[in-house]
Image (cartoon, rainbow, N blue to C red; front, side, top):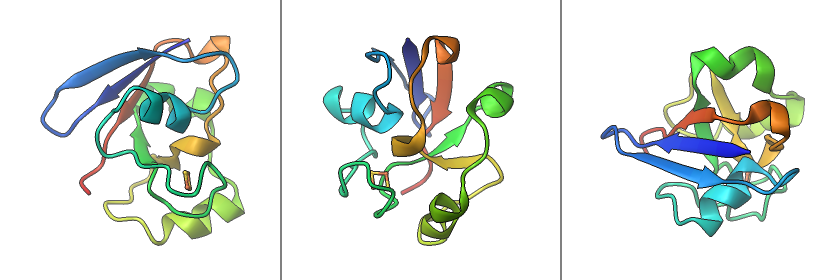
Length: 103
Ligand code: FES
């Protein structure tokens, strides 16, 4: 599945994810700026924060409680905030658009 990361400047990074990898892993592998993934995808650092494009919100779903409490530590948190390490890339998310928050 493809993922499109869009920077604040509007610059887009179109990257190909392997099935069932996390959106964070794909970003780190492709050097998408602003996604660090410091904790290795364990929902414990908040450095993989993204804003899910409104069109994709229903498909991606809501954060669980553990993710929500970690999002408390992130900046520029919005209704559509998610930790990208908790988004699993499956075929039905092909074309997913994620916006990079201000860091
Ligand atoms: Fe640490 Fe996602 S990589 S919370």
